[in-house]
Image (tube, rainbow over all chains, first blue to last red; front, side, top):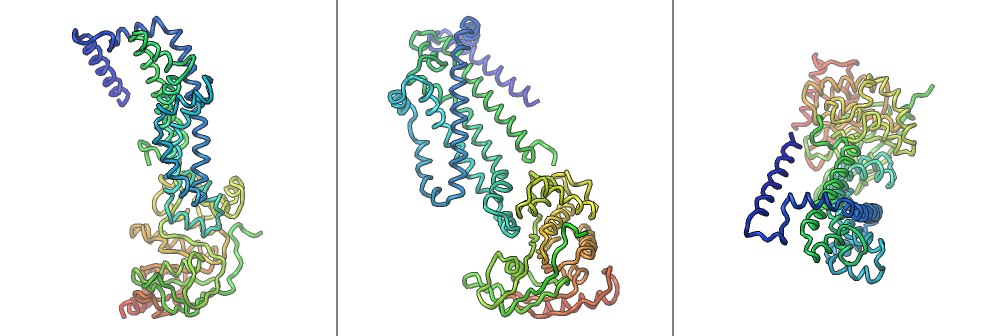
Length: 249
Length: 243
């Protein structure tokens, strides 16, 4: 039922898109219709897939870096109050950095390789992961922490048995946001300077007025983001079975 | 063969003129109290009389502002069960051992006999969300027992339950304590519960909490809530409360 509803809305959206694109007043160079987009997907499939693979690697590796760094940072900040107080403003600041401006500087400093792409994806994903995990770690009920103390639990025991499991739902909220913005990060990174990748292909297509190919690239990027989101949601169902909203109590 | 939960007998647990304040508010005033080994002492009093403070003092979660205390290692059972939703019943009880450094698998293994003894075997692998309120309290009690401490501190253990479950659970607790005698400090606002379970009843006054009555309950066990003697004990505690 839920899937049917979602599919219906997607179909309506595509129909509306086709309708607008078919209007005489709409320039073919600014808006490709779904039909043209599908044609481009078909004609350029090999080219699109080769570049999509490059972008996907950047996204997945960048996400991995930010998950490891974000979790380590959040746990350290949680355990060390002075570190949290000192580093929190910096953490928020990291999210305010305009990545679009920073990306070319990264490329200038580190070259056209995968390094700067990972750095940019990781930077954009770091904030939602760290902040959500940090909030989650602090969400354990105070009475429960008191009980752990009365049972003689060490700080690490409480972290492992109580605070980390209690923080998992929050961590997954952060991961879901990170999964979707990671794709945007990779596109920005490629725009700043790259030899390959979907972001670069879309940019080139724009310059060469190959509008259907641009739309085909956008569709693949969207599918990539939705796919990563779905994978994260699936992982959440497996890792946090006690928190399932639709599960019987 | 010693059982998993066997604990040493209490030597002494006493309060001498103990006062505890929170800022301008005095929660407990000049409390004198001795707990006798293997006795269940029930502390009754109106809400806000510092009953929970009393328990947290014994548990070492708070320190007195004045007076002296002698403590014994104690296991604290809070008002709500505080079971971890991501662990099954066995894992929740085993947490008590893990806190003492026992590895998880071994802690679970050592909790099994206790579930058998108290007839909870079929609930071992059930998560708290699927357990009734009464069952959750039983699991929380096993977690308290598994700490292997000589003193049990029970803070309104049946406070959140409906009347029928309460009656059921207090019989279960009386049975469990008959099998596993401990020095128990039970805090409750329910006089009937106190008379049913306790060897001795201590009545606290409204804030600041002071001891205003302290008398034994000499009723044979197992007890029933009916009968003249039971009613007399209840009346005695109620009178002290209303004085």
